[in-house]
Image 1 (cartoon, rainbow, N blue to C red):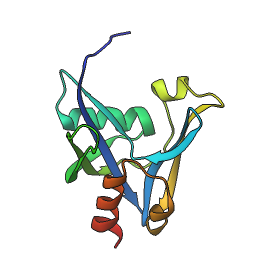
Image 2: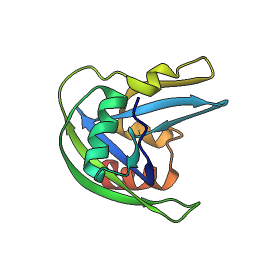
Image 3: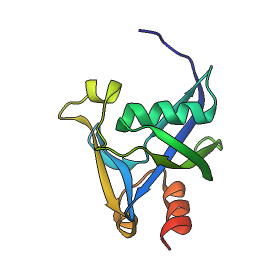
Image 4: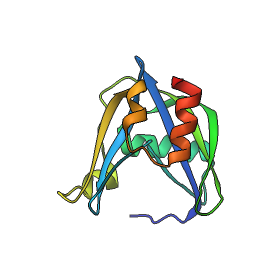
Length: 139
C-alpha cells in the first residue's frame, strides 16, 4: 500500500440529483453528524484530482465535471477550504475503500440522499459550509 503525504487542504463535493443532496451520515466516538463527501488533498494532487479520488473512494461514483461552488473558512484554524458542485456518473452510491474497511458499531459511514430543505435540520458540519450551502442552493 502506497502512503501519500497530505498537505492540509480538504476538498468537498456537493452532489445534487432530483432536488436531493448526497451526504455522508457519520457516527464517530459517540458523535453523530453529516458531512459532504471529500477529504484531504495529497501532495502530488490538484484540488480537482483529490476531489475525483475522494468522491470515488467515498461514493463509488466518478466525477464527470466539477465547478467551485464556494469556499468555507474553518473557524478553528482560519484555513479556506473549497466546496465543488459535482456532476457524477449514474449509479447507486456506496462506501468503498478505507471508510468501508473501518466500519464498526461505534464508527460508521452511511451515504444518504437528503431532500435539500431538510439539510437545515441536520447536524451538517462544518456549520459555516452548511450555512453557505443553504444560502446558495436552498433558500
